[in-house]
Length: 142
Image 1 (cartoon, rainbow, N blue to C red):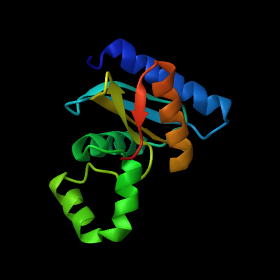
Image 2: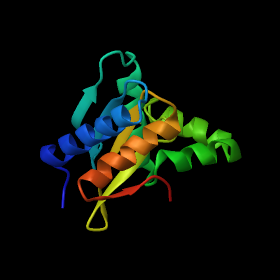
Image 3: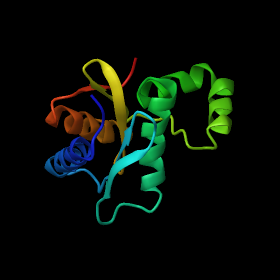
């Protein structure tokens, strides 16, 4: 199985719907394929101009490390030197805060979703809802 535009678009729309149902702040959602390429993206009205870079960085970092950005966040305090090195080698693209979630299809990573707009825990709620809505498995941590 691989990430398709149809799947990615459905994840984005379901994540945004979850955000509206919870009355979260305006969200920005990015879905990447397993190679880190952008497949689908939407930014709600009034979502800040940096939100794309943050959402993309959460998803990209999850793909790059092989686990969700919540785990990256958890490791930051334990190993700040390594996290600084990751930031350098990634060209600053890696964003180590929750809501970068790996997307699994038939047990394999087929992509990742990253969301920015509300607090990271709320963003992650929407990421998980988006993936669940298409019947795939989400992996927010290890």
